[in-house]
Image 1 (cartoon, protein in one colour):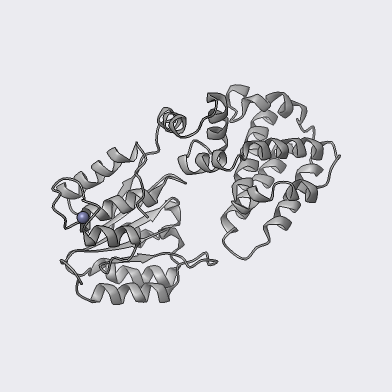
Image 2: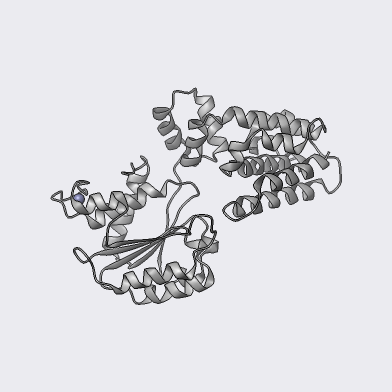
Length: 328
Ligand SMILES: [Zn+2]
């Protein structure tokens, strides 16, 4: 599928290409914001690398190489990513990569290796990859992608040119959403707040009409604070959100706001200032309240990070919401 670049990614791609022309690095680590729309960026970068069409400046999108890049079947590109249902990239996958690097090009000489979510490389896999990074084949370029740079092994990182890709400005995201969704600005801004202004997440919230589910969830949270409902009822009522891991993030945003409110930080720093009256009613009077809310926040981070593993999200969320209810 041809991935369309998001408006602000044009200049990012231009900078990446320019940096590579000035100082070619055979291995690059792209550190992106979360939910950044990396698929479009990497595809367009690969098109520029592989196109053998007649166009001089932009890739043509029509030649055999371009069509293979778009279909993810180019014989000179190797994609390394965690297998579905596994949270780590394992050594057997890296061995396939090493075999690819040892072969010669099937086309014009240039080859590329893309490592998605490089923070998922486990130690053995990372060590195996190091060898290829140190002795890449002729004209073989590595691009490692991550939105969690602390998880990337320092040994891997030190062998790469590191590029921090900037997050789009809020105004750029809002303009883009206005062109895509027939909604009021206040709805778009609300969706952006829940999507942390990240384009993919915000787009998903709007496409799936999740704002009303999120509002329903907030009603459930208020009822939990008054012991008027059960955690299992609240979790069952927003199944779509927890299947997409959005639930963890939305709950994290609210707990972050509650920590601020409970610490009596100025309400203008809240992510959802419209909920401030509700937050103040949820002020917890126990002396260790803020500490306990931090505990809930940490549990949410663990659930969010483990969603690709074999945990049972519904049960985890129910336990977290029981802890929330017990605060009051
Ligand atoms: Zn082409």
